[in-house]
View 1: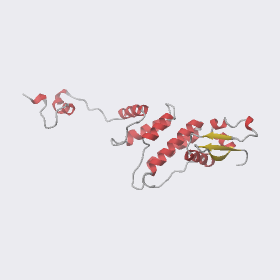
View 2: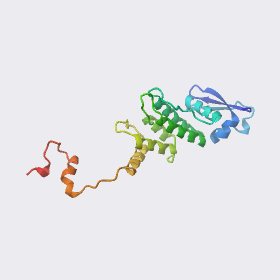
View 3: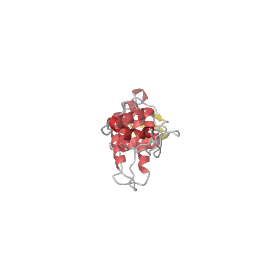
View 4: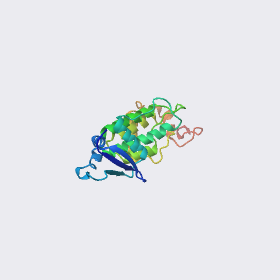
Length: 213
């Protein structure tokens, strides 16, 4: 990997990562815009103060190895949740720096991580915090948004934490659930006495107004 190098200064402490300029420019048009002819003779430092060290480290591994390593076996309990958080942040980073192949690799890693159980056989979906970050950092037609909706629609449970979820995500989730619901059972007038009491205010042990003579 000969040639000019670039320094990525990451996080609040601006921790430095040295990367070969050619690889960086090949992957990201956003980062390429920082590396111009007028830079020659200068320090070639790209500041990324708002980004996570773990995310940039994963990205650097990607540009050198061309892949994102994911576990193929079970992992310690709760680790899947942390991995998904990192991957969602990594996709948002890929959106920011305009690296399409990296985003595609992250999508595959999210699916793989979701399918790989923890030691206690628990599988995970991205939670409220990760979903909200995804919606804050991606456009409305983002494939990550579609994946998050699909994961929740097909794996979600009524005991999952939903408070504070992004309204756009909830709207898309409801639409997906309605589109794939079981065939509708029509309320028939002949069955009204047995069907509609579940919507009445009276309790199970109380008489319905229709049965009071």
